[in-house]
Image (cartoon, rainbow, N blue to C red; front, side, top):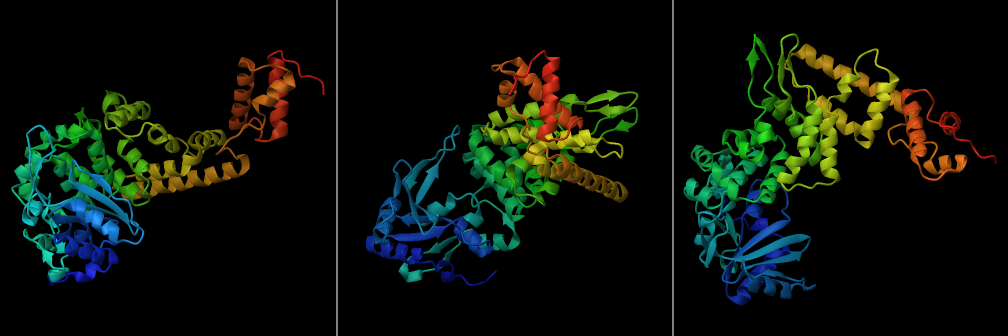
Length: 477
């Protein structure tokens, strides 16, 4: 990381020259602050969200910048917050007047007053987010770093500008943001700061579930999500946010028989799957795939610890969890439910004597999500025994090969009945009724069982046979 205190090369985009021009015209001061500066210094790519702080009216500055742009983009003004949003050059630029804040105990919404740049940097969550670059003509590109945030970037340290207890108590969302940044950037949270999060963890209760979920998503999309999840657990935040997950922690022993710690196993599974997919909802499925094990855990003297039906119970728990956290209750939730419900299915078709019927049913039930399901099952292998690890992965290769052979022959992944309900009604001259459903279901079962091939003529003849059993007569052509 460079040692210079001027970074005008970071401000090469013409938008910054235009902001400087507007700043001079209004006789203000302005600075780019926060994530843009942090990510530039970390060489994390070009930011699309830029925060500009003005010593004066941020709204007036935004309006002036818009006026100087050729296409005069519309400025979205939020008068209550003293902020304005300007879309330009495929970027979202937020303007705000420098301010100082004070908080009441029962809300994270501050009382805001106009302030200096120093006041504004004091209110920032972390030293690495308080870094600012001047957009003023006299010192364009100069770094303003009152809290040694540059050194914290070099040391890979998450630290608050002010006393951490005050920072986190004032706005408890910052506790989640600290853990999210530690997870995303692979940084360490300062011990004093981490202790303050643990001390004030109950304050998270005043934060909306929507904002909590937003941070959870970002942690789950980290390169190694277990870092953030482990920090949530160690600071006692996780038991307030995802008690279904912390319920898995611990190892019980009865008569010398123990089960694995399903919480730490789950974190390994999430890391494993994150190496192979950026699909947020598949990562959620990995996180929740074993949540049914806590309520289904039993000890049987003959066979030891059991978790019978944990996939079914877990899939039912997904709905309540999504609803509580204000996550979408649509196809995304149904996808996670399906992955949890089917998470053990591929294991059942590993045996050498498994029937083609079992393979067909697996492909049929998983449909377009069969590859995601296999990715989840392979991520679920966390044994540290090299021989067993190799054996399990070899078994899944065998399953994949069996699936390929059956699918090429029987085409059941996106199953469409060779004979439609309309054709059944026309053949037997009947209206929509129970018998139509019975015949359609029987054709599907016959194909999945391998009694008939997945072909029109075979299905048609089977339909006639089934109709006869139901005392239906085909009409003459």
